[in-house]
Amino acid sequence: MIWVKVGYLGPRGTFSEEASLRYFAGKDVEWKMYPSIVDVLDAVQEQEIDCGVVPIENSIEGSVNTTMDGLAQDPDLFIEAELVLPIEQNLLVNEGTVLSDIKEIWSHPQALAQCRNFIRSLGVRVKTWDSTATAALELAECKRQDIGAIGNAWAAKNFGLHILQSNLQDMSENHTRFVVVRRGETALSRADKSMLLITLNEERAGALVHVLNIFAALELNLTRIESRPTRKKLGTYQFFIDVEAGVQEEDLQKAVSIIGTFGHQVRVLGSYMKDKKI
Image 1 (tube, helix red, strand yellow):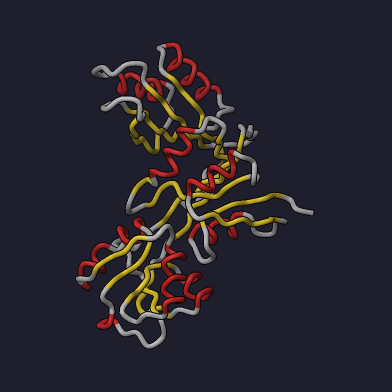
Image 2 (cartoon, helix red, strand yellow):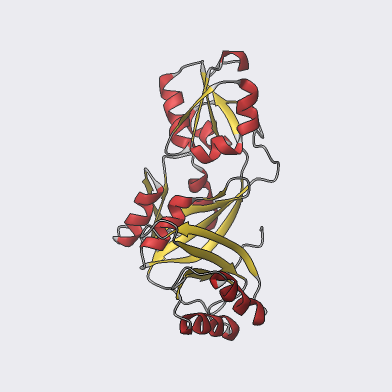
């Protein structure tokens, strides 16, 4: 009997797959792979799957805007958990390739950005793909020796590639935060972190500071604030805020209520247990 249907960014060998397998280890799962993050979120919304695992933030490159915009645009999506995965980027090649042979590097834009210094040192071209695993798979299938792919050891093992160099990322402490997304709000009796989406009712000096002062007055610790365009008008933004409190906590409920009385829109995007790896 299938316990849950879970979707993630494919093909096999992605960091998303690794995160999914870690989070759902020991559970009865039917897995589904999708070609893009948008497809994963759409599958959750359309109830093709029960939940999806998608990256939302990297310690080097920052937020994954595709995920953030998808959560903002679909009011039915809700984050029920987070998982922080250590990321080690490797140079994957076909057998017989040496470093001097490589004229081009393939990978996902986030992975390429995490390894800027290494790529710059080689002085080679880059080509972007929908995932690190897709780049690795294409390299394995074309068997070219003038191309390298940046990805994880999981992809190298799956596609028969060799790791020519390890730990390519610019910073040794490289982690990606993944979120588990469901359709419809899931109330957790135990949660110590929440993500909010706040849209100000007007663009005026001090409006955001006023909102932040409400959290400060209630001694609610904010661990992340990020703006994204509302896509309605140039120069208008909405704000993603991570707060160290569950939605069941009285102070957070009070903060949401007070912000709402001033006409600002507040949406709880998720409430869950903080991954202790952070």
